[in-house]
Image (tube, rainbow, N blue to C red):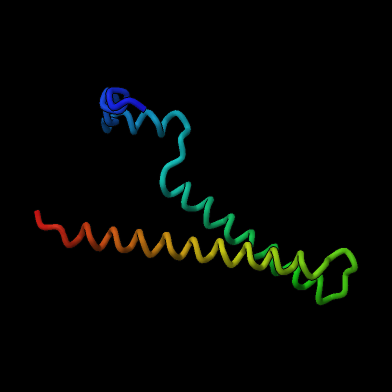
Length: 98
């Protein structure tokens, strides 16, 4: 990519951000909510598969249970890591002197 292509782009003005929200682009809180709901759904899916396997359903195999549990664990670990980075960034901003 050429440097001129990057420098020719102007940053969004606050009025540009308002028009993005009016056009249906989700805000930060909506993105955060959707992400947390998807992590919760992965955890619930893992729980349901575990209960079905323990209950003796023939359609549920052990590898399905392990994969679902691992996906839920990884999603939760990533969510916690992102939360930690956000808190760290907030604390760094609060330490800035004006």
